[in-house]
Image (cartoon, rainbow, N blue to C red; front, side):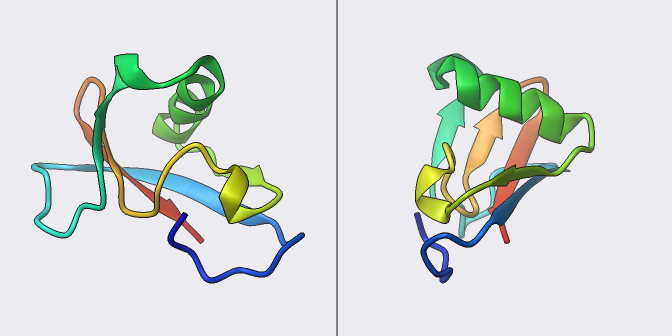
Length: 78
């Protein structure tokens, strides 16, 4: 994943609704392409929660990725 974090450090996932797919989006996936864990995490993100994972490599999303669900959601990894 495209994040500058060190091994063993927690990272935070967040998602925000966007009107359209930005030109700098790193990837685009439809919600039905997500595995069960990623889908559950996306639902939490859409509800406004922040999801934590151990390392960026464990995140089921890429930083800047757009997920198509009921709208377009841009996922960020911090």
